[in-house]
Amino acid sequence: EAEVAQSPRYKITEKSQAVAFWCDPISGHATLYWYRQILGQGPELLVQFQDESVVDDSQLPKDRFSAERLKGVDSTLKIQPAELGDSAMYLCASSTRQGLGEQYFGPGTRLTVT
Amino acid sequence: QQQVKQSPQSLIVQKGGISIINCAYENTAFDYFPWYQQFPGKGPALLIAIRPDVSEKKEGRFTISFNKSAKQFSLHIMDSQPGDSATYFCAASGDKIIFGKGTRLHILP
Image 1 (cartoon, chains in turn blue, red):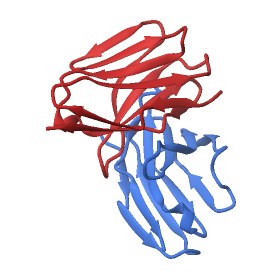
Image 2 (tube, one colour):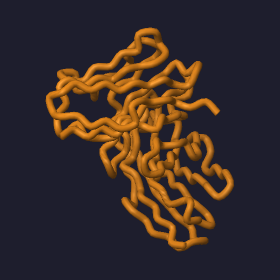
Image 3 (tube, helix red, strand yellow):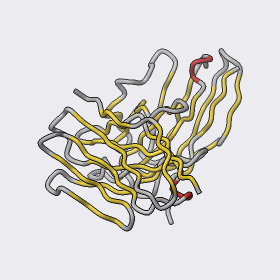
Image 4 (cartoon, chains in turn purple, yellow):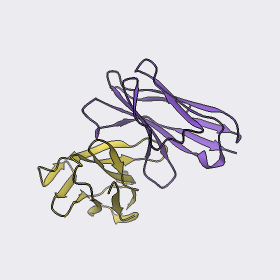
């Protein structure tokens, strides 16, 4: 069964350092999402790509966060510099172009900023 | 108008009982209402979903009830099992998807 891949699974970094997360969506899924999930809460959308284009980054803290999906396949989310409040689970999901509500999530990256 | 309100925050049910989780939305432009199940350390997984043109959808022990006029929908888990213990998120999607804050369900053995 096809799955969304994410790496690393866990990351510990010191504040002010840079950190990057990678996501490989299900093959053929045109839409890719990055979410942040704080413990005990629902996923919060950070950025949505349709192919290689950003269609929604209204909740992305652009002063420190950046995301790219250069060839419309895999994607990287970067934080520079990391802050203590960035500690969370970062989830990647993908869907077909028409299936916005049917998202397939990866296992996530647990980020701890010390 | 973009919020999805989910309740209860946590729920404890005896094995074999019925678990009920409720959600309410405000934006009538939403046209797809999925439920996701999340186990600790895992990403959410799509469990069951409904469109507003039907009032109920059943898949095995899981049923969604949908009330379009009240803008409410609920998840019923029949014959709840310890393996159902997880966090459940409702969501509403249109041109974007909004998640509820989640319900932590614990089924007592």
